[in-house]
Length: 346
Image 1: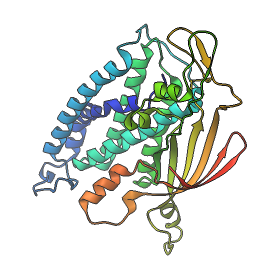
Image 2 (image 1 turned 90 degrees about the vertical axis):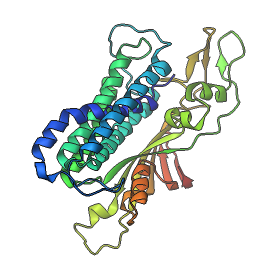
Image 3 (image 1 turned 180 degrees about the horizontal axis):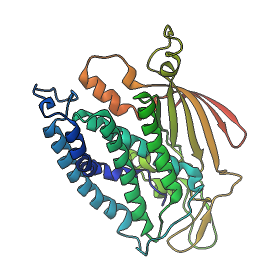
């Protein structure tokens, strides 16, 4: 079973814990007469700390975290042996696609928590450190849980990519007070063949398609979280934000981005395309037919948050969708030395 994209998202509700830690700091810096008095639209950010929103977020976060923690244990750890805390060197496993999952997950956690904190009226700097603290705490929590699992272990490589994700978010907020480089994701599941794998003894081997279903699930939701062959991770750069300070008259659309992506193909095992079935027999796929390789992409993209609109509903929807790389033409260069063009890649 691969290390997970989905597991890192299980603890979004921990926002409540760090909100509580920063609540006293933020209210101490907030003048008593600055608390909002007007009636706010649900989607309108408060211009000063709104206690009702704050405590709603804290209570909701605690409830979500409790449910997510139980669900995570039931789904990932219950059926596996627990041992003493230990580390695990998983560098280059899954061609580092799991590491990219840690990167985008931590970045997204920081961004969403920051936006939520700003919605409550929290000031920019405390909201920034709230997002960073929550993102770091969530990922560290999952790594510690992995550290007690015999099947996995605490990974310093994972922690490094967690740090890179929160660092990308924090550095941009500190430098520009905006996100000019967005971490995004795209998904196209391959048509897995029904060709049989090779096996050393035992019953007939499973097909490639069966192996993919065993690893990555069947449903769209499960596959979207776990299928390393289907996912690409992108750094989407807003062109206008970098050009306009030097050329205020630029005609570049404010929403136009250029995205650089990373993916991998033919991943049916962590380090090699081989696995042991329930009967203890070794199954494998030949390297000449299923070579494992890395992919690098470049493609146009859109920053939804920079599309002009006065609608609060659309602004909220655009912000929520901004972790998705739009389908668009793309150019691929891979480690097999090949260059491919796509009219439509997602």
